Amino acid sequence: MSPEIKTAPALLSMRFNVLTLAAPATAATAATTSATLGWPGRAMIMGWMAFFTGGHSRKDAFFSYICLAMGIAFGTGAALAVGGLTPVIGSLAFGPVVFVVAMIVESLGALSPINNKPAYFLGLITFFAAHQVPGVTVFLKLAAVAAIGSVAAWLAYRWQSFIAGR
Image (cartoon, rainbow, N blue to C red; front, side, top):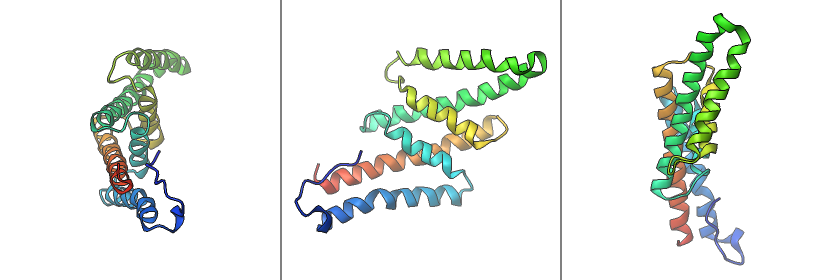
C-alpha cells in the first residue's frame, strides 16, 4: 500500500527509515487527536482503512470517505429501524432491515463515484462496533473521527510518496 523505495540496501538507508516512520507518526498523531477529543479510536482506524479501499487521489479519498460516512448513516438508520420493528415482529425485524440496507449498498455500487462497497461496509462496522445508542450526535461523532483517520491516511500516503520521490 505504501510507496516503495527501490534501493539495494533499503533497510540501511535514511530514506527508507524516514519513509517507514511517516505512516506511524501520522497514525499516532491521528490517534492522539481522537483520544484528546474523547472520540473512539476504532472509528479513526476505520477511516484510515477506508482510504485504502479506493484510489489515492484527493478526489478518490474524498469519495471513499463519503461512502464510509454513508455506511455509518446506514448503520444508524438500520439500528433505529430494528428498534422500531422489534416490538412488532420480534427478531424477524433483522431480515427486512438487512435486506433493505444491503439492497441500497448494492445499488450504490453501480453509481460512480460513490460506488465503494467496502467503504460502505466499513461504515456499517464502524457504527455497530461503537455500541452506541443510534442518533444524529453519534453519527456526527463517528463520521468526524473517521474523517480524521481518512485525512491522516491520505496525508501519510502523500508524505510517503514525497519521500519516495514520486
